Picture 1: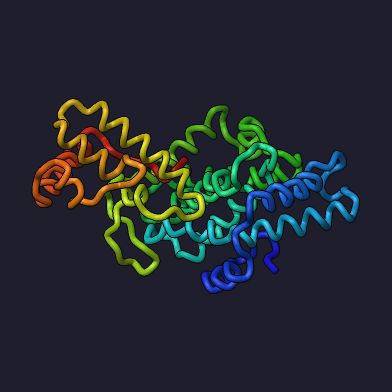
Picture 2: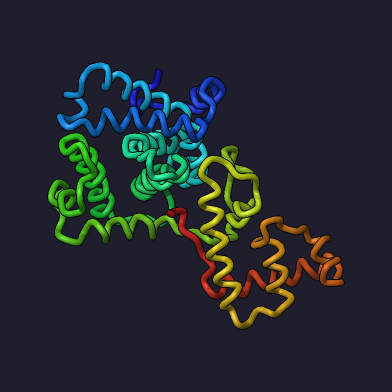
Amino acid sequence: MLRDCQLVSTDFLSRTAARYPLLRPEQEIELGRQIRAWRDHPDGPQAAPKPIRRRGERAQQRFLLCNLRLAHYIARRFNNRGVPMEDLIQSATEGLLQAVQRFDPTAGNRFSSYAVWWAQQACQIAVATQGTGIKLPTTTSEALRRVSRATTRLRGELNREPTAEEIEEGAKLKPGQLLQLRTAARAADTRSLDAPMRGDDGRGDAAWLDLITTEPEPGSQLEAQDLRRSLRRLVETTPTLTPQQREILQCRYLNPQPMSLVQIASRLHLNRESVRRLERSAMAILRSRGLRMRVYL
């Protein structure tokens, strides 16, 4: 069994995914209530009665194991960024554990939607401090590490999420510096919507826009919705797009059922190559308007 966030390998993930399928909504609620009864005990998690503590620990363990594939999915987005895949999976798993410990089953949200942010934030910090993307100054990287250590320590001491002021004091930061550090970490992880992204094997030319039209994986629906909103806003507000270009982008990326180039060509009474050229020119216009996304929700 996994003990909190011990090193998680890809082989372990594949075996775990087979043994521990994704939880159903009612299972998330039941396990979440057991975790909350333990972690929110008036005397603290360690002082909770043994039956409550054991149920909470078992529920937390199962919650984590059943969602490890989500950690792998998030870690894959940051591959080939100068951080070994094993380390990325480990960082995403640590973020996943924080989400498990803080998940509120009464809020009405699926766990995957809630956990995406935590796993991504952990991977962002790993890339910002170890990766080969936009390099952060040494002092900023060290400050981010202090923030991570202080946050973990304060959560254990306070049995709740520490405030920004408490983290700044624990990490020996100046007032307001925590927000600057988090902004710097996100800025170091910015990429174009149509930039190629790589898979685990280092191959593949899929673009970030393809996330909109691919089959949903755990947590991907939330990101797809965010991407659609960003793209829709640009399509609607860019004056240099022609009506044909707007319709092509709408059909390709914004419709609930995306259309192929052949279908769009038939709809607009054009040939396929003409549709392809119009799409490319439309994307060039949007890039000139700053079409970008952050791997951050």
